[in-house]
Length: 230
Image (cartoon, rainbow, N blue to C red):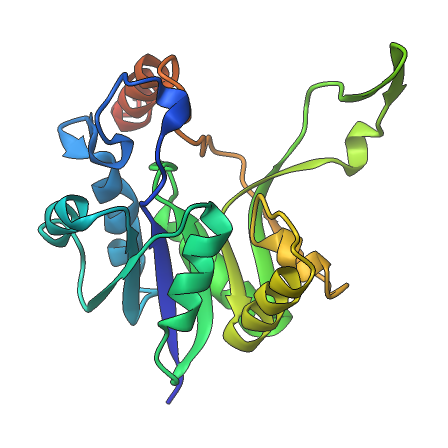
């Protein structure tokens, strides 16, 4: 019987936090470590048969172990995100057929989206949570020339990104053979020219990246947990 795994990426160095917090995935948001928000959403959704947690070092692994859902497999991270994902893929048991890949720095993922993503990947083999771009996006070309992109066709990628296990493993192998630099997992699948479905997210699902995000995240959590007015 095939199973579904969730790769939870927690090994990022957080350089852009500029020392504002010691470890951003352990930073307390609303009284819970940031990691616990993502892990809790997955546990509530019931989509996972196995959790693969990619950690930065032994100290962090021990702290995450106290927070992790079960069953859990711990894998050391790499020097870049794509190498951390590759390590996790290599560690998957043979009976895993589908894989969620999620950045734990995105704590606002919703259980209902996880359930919807699993339903889609069983039909489409690759699906990404994403939102439509609302800003005007321009390409800057030297010397100072701009080109406006068609906003109607632009989507901002989020996580989770979900794939058939064989597909994402093949995609990462292709990326490694080409020495391709990946900023997300869908970019690896693009190298295979394989179609990727999008699930539109109309709820905020930002990634904690810089120190200025800390206050915003607190306000966003408070807004989301406010009781609905009668």
